[in-house]
Length: 88
Image (tube, rainbow, N blue to C red; front, side, top):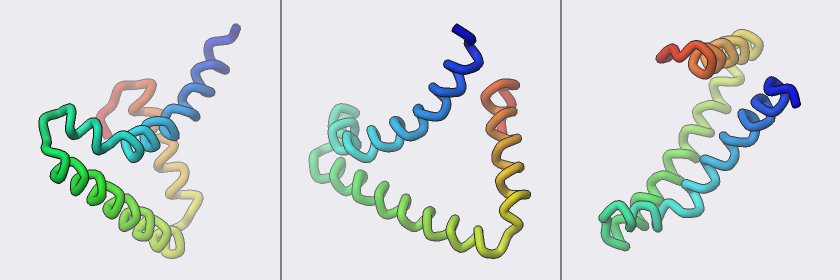
């Protein structure tokens, strides 16, 4: 099997799984890290609120910035981070 094809498939799926697992299991993860149940629940809710706010900010930026330039900048930065080990 060609490693390029399998690597690109894994890279496409991992971001989806990572965010969903944190959003779903966030309270349990925080409890296992030593937080109380109330603090863990508040932390998970705050994480969700920050995600909603960041999504709204990102959507508003889409209407003010050249989409192609923003897409290419993100693509190049992700490539550099993944394959060249550069800190962005």
